[in-house]
Each structure stands twice: as C-alpha cells, then as structure tokens.
Length: 307
Image 1 (cartoon, rainbow, N blue to C red):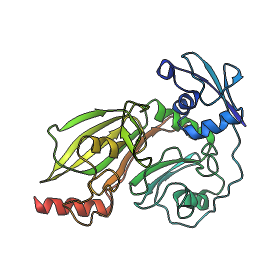
Image 2 (image 1 turned 90 degrees about the vertical axis):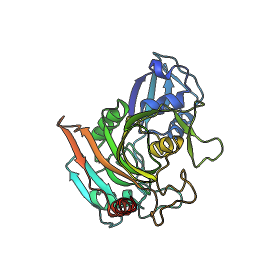
Image 3 (image 1 turned 135 degrees about the vertical axis):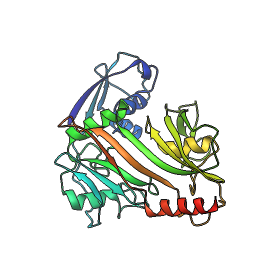
Image 4 (image 1 turned 135 degrees about the horizontal axis):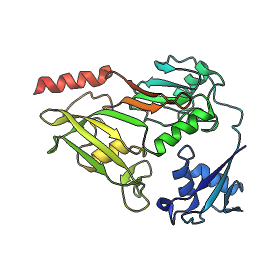
C-alpha cells in the first residue's frame, strides 16, 4: 500500500473529490477513485471521504493506493516494435488494430499481453492488474508511439509530466476538408456524450479542459494532412476536436461521416508520430519520431494523385 498526499488547487475548487483526485493523479481513473473512496482509502483533511464530497482549494487529500494484485492477464508472445528500452521504461510503436490493455471483448492480443511476455514482472503496478506499466493510451485503431513504465518511479514521473504539460505528443492525421488557417489552437472542454456513452463530445457541462494545437502540412481537393500537438490528453481528444470543427479524421467510424469519398481508408488515419519526455532517472530530455505507417502513406499518395 502506498500513500499519496495531495493538495487541492484553485483549479479543482468545488469539484467532487473523485473528479479532483483523478485530475491530480491522472494514472487513477475516476471510477478507480470511487472504489478507493468506498473502501475508506481516500481521506479529506484526515477523515474518510465519500466519492461525492466537495473539495476546496487548500484541502489535504490522502489517497491510499493498494499494492498491485497478482497479475492474472496472460503473457503472449506477440512481436513488438520497440523503439527504445532501458531499465526504467520502453517506447513502443503500436500497430493499428492492437488494443492497449485488456477490456471487455479484448482480453487477449493486447499490448499489455505482449509486454508481459517481453518484460516479465518488470512493469509498474500503478495501473493495476489490467494496465501494468501503461502511462497513457492510444486508441485501438490509432497507430504510433506509446511509452511504458517499468517501475513506479518512472510511472509517477511520467504521469506528472503529462499533468504539467511537459510531455510532448504529436500526431499526424488526414482529415476531411480544407482549413482557412495554416495553424491554430482548439481550446474546448471534452466530456462524455449525454446521448451516446461510447462517445466523447465538446461540452461545458462536466467537460475537462482540452487543448489541441493544429498545423496544416498539406492540402488536397477535399482532405488535409495535419499535425496535432496535444497540450492535454483527454479520451479521443484529437478525434473529438477535429470533428467539432467539421473536419473529422478520415475513416473515423465513431466521429466521422458514414460515407467517405475515399474508399478503403482501413479505419481512422491517425498516427502518434512523435513523443518527447524527460527521463525520470537521468533527467535527459528524449525525443522519438516514427515514420508514417504504410496505410497512411498509401492514402496520402492516393490523395496526391487526385490533386
């Protein structure tokens, strides 16, 4: 059991404690915090707190995080493209179609199953049984770079970098339409859709701050090739923000149009291309860049041929 002492900031003033803690500790989901509250492992100014307790700036919150349970997810010998690895972390280039961690309907064949075979027990336990080592996620049908923590020191350091926006994440995307500006910023809060629980949406009601910086790299007749840099990391953030602007990611089955003028997009054209962070042990600033995958390059060539 590890204990973490947090101080509520002005930004979390008036939040429910489950929302405040998940904002202060990004590695814990809101539902995970609620479970800890029910178990009496979240204290507000020294007293056990219910999940709906409201917090004020300056409040002291103690979170008791249980030691990871014995891992029940099975290791699977699945090939991994490892871009970098040391005793604290590794950077993986995830292929399109691979789920990051086990979830209902996807208990095998995930990145975590492959990592268990590659790393054995050398993965941080903060993510729990299902998500060992996972600091951040990318969608099943998004390809690209993902960082994995091998120990809790690395996990906590990397999570803090994400929280203070010093963790660089840049994506390449092909999107519908053309833009009036060559570069711009989308600053719009994102929350769960009240209509479809599988979707996220831009909303002021319970939405969390979300900022995406967009740069147009190349334009075609009805599509654009863009670079997106995440300042925050909300669920489906790039897909939601671009769809909100009327420029959904090409091939996106959830936020894009049902019919697309380009056939055989093979799913959403979104690739986590660049990642940068400060090494948790050495303090060295590291950057990694991945080439655009074959499916992405094929679509770019098809669009260039069409003019």
